[in-house]
Length: 126
Image 1 (tube, rainbow, N blue to C red):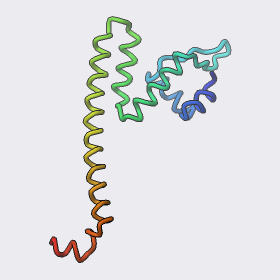
Image 2: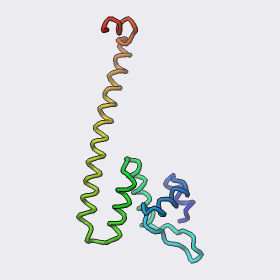
Image 3: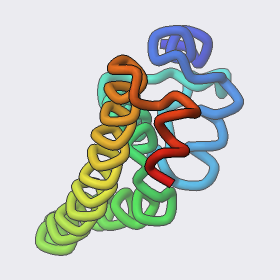
Image 4: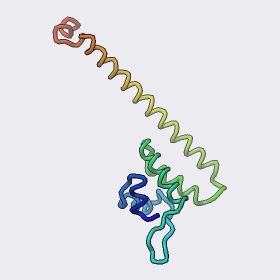
């Protein structure tokens, strides 16, 4: 696939795809004889993984480390697994915090819907 096709498929700009490759978020993409990027299934898998991880808020540095470890081979399986477990823990903590925020917003909305957030009501709580 061309970079334009991958860009459309994953809704990521071509500039972002080039950036991901340049900084090591995506291993080097195979190239055609003329030097044009030719994304194969493996390259697309990396793009999809990085898009997912970035959307989850995983830091670029952790992802670069993961790719580097992956490229070193099977001797890094345990290190890769630990890195992923650490990132999972951080994501779970962020999700719990977001759930608390969502619950708080739901409570506030409920109070408005029940008429408990009027100025007179708030002054009485004072």
